[in-house]
Amino acid sequence: MELTGLTGLFLSAFLAATVLPSSSEIVLVGLLATDKFNVLHLLMVASVGNILGAILNYYLGRSFERYRDKTWFPVSEKGMKWAQGWYDKWGRWALLLSWVPMGGDALTVAAGAMREKLPVFILLVGFAKTMRYIVVILIFLYANTQFG
Image 1 (cartoon, rainbow, N blue to C red):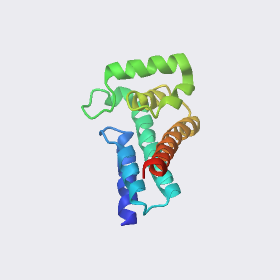
Image 2 (cartoon, rainbow, N blue to C red; image 1 turned 60 degrees about the horizontal axis):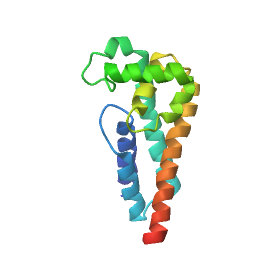
Image 3 (tube, rainbow, N blue to C red; image 1 turned 180 degrees about the vertical axis):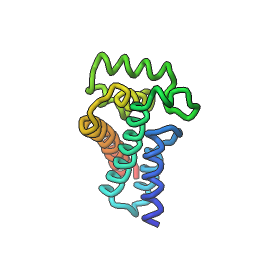
Image 4 (tube, rainbow, N blue to C red; image 1 turned 60 degrees about the vertical axis):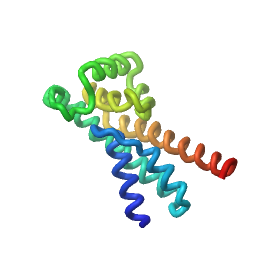
């Protein structure tokens, strides 16, 4: 049961950062609600899955010219221009917004297209995405103690 839940969380977190729409926060909260999982394990699995999905976007961005006309490409031409504009204006610090549901994925693709250094990318994106999951967990735990 635990391995199945963690695998599902990993996959939903990975997909949430890539092409397919997915809501990893719902899966995370669902697993938290069962009270059968270690909170730290859930945080690590969700974060790693989401960061790896963002790294896939990064590499797609590095190959932007080759793949941008593909239907499966995660960012539209308009979205890519928006993300590159943000990246031009704010630089690598824009990656701290990579957790944002609308636009965050485009920033990770733009970072690849703009040839950001991978270690810097992983550090900033890893921080942003992990912090989002920490906030989700803290909100759940607070709500659970207040209303549960």
